[in-house]
Image (cartoon, rainbow, N blue to C red; front, side, top):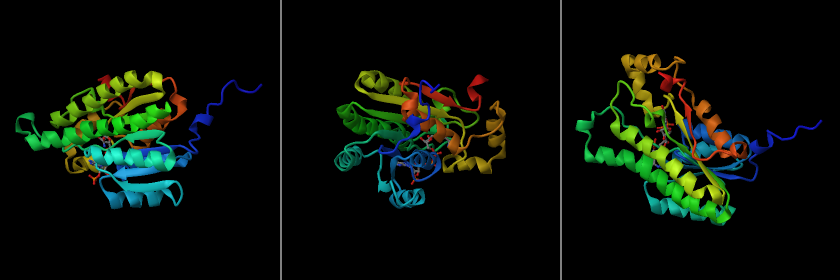
Length: 260
Ligand code: NDP
């Protein structure tokens, strides 16, 4: 008897256009690889233009383009969304991955510029992208947005002090749910992934700090950090119709961190 449902078919993204912000390296690049591997045309959008071009080249000669994009500049974001609408008819998948940490500053010592910079990239920039690409998706009544939040949106990390980062990621989670609710009946799904510590440039400082590393691992039931592909696999699921019933979900990928 033939199965009643084809569970693999949604993972064929041939003909779909995906934008990944901060896609030049780290978790973002893993998301680019995952989406590209299953057939999507991938736009690697990063503040580091040459890095984005290099990343696109690594993906292969077909279906990958690197573009310079600073997500904090809403004019640039609007322009990219309009450009892709013109060239490809629209964007099917948006992965809002660009984010910064600048971790380890006690709240009472955080300068205005420091606070604004983190919130500007992690929350404001993410909103500009949701708004610009969301508009084109709503126009076609079709699209999926995956935001990269963090377990820091749920818990307060120990031992490093990073109120600005934690607050920005909690904002990402609530924004995800708000947009999901507003757009659910117009064909656009919005979800988020909330990862634990993943070893990338963002938190490479831990390599110099054994005490901090031990604390991170000690607070994690799995006893390890995550790998970029472990986040990208969830992003891929949320980006495809395999997750068609999900919107407004914040999927924790934390090695059990929040169990304790
Ligand atoms: P990386 O620092 O390795 O990569 C981030 C990329 O985003 C870089 O290429 C960076 O460019 C780019 N970027 C920075 N600012 C902007 C901007 N204004 N516009 C466009 N691109 C920008 O970070 P990760 O891969 O570790 O993190 C990716 C996401 O995952 C972030 O949102 C982060 O908060 C989140 N996350 C990461 C965790 C971790 O442990 N690594 C855990 C939980 C969540 P450049 O290098 O030139 O600045």
